[in-house]
Length: 72
Image (cartoon, rainbow, N blue to C red; front, side):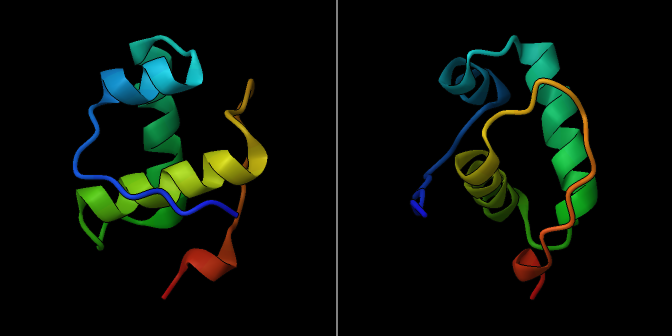
């Protein structure tokens, strides 16, 4: 598993990285945020979302994933 180090990432930058349009990426981030939780701060969440993408790939459809090992 790769570890991503981020200084900052905008929705547009993440969308470019995964070949999605900005609105699709925003929906995906919102979807993953609902799973990961919002209590850890933006950059931490983005890092966890990138780890999820790295492990399962950018989803083409929405499915619920419960990554228990991402909860502290």
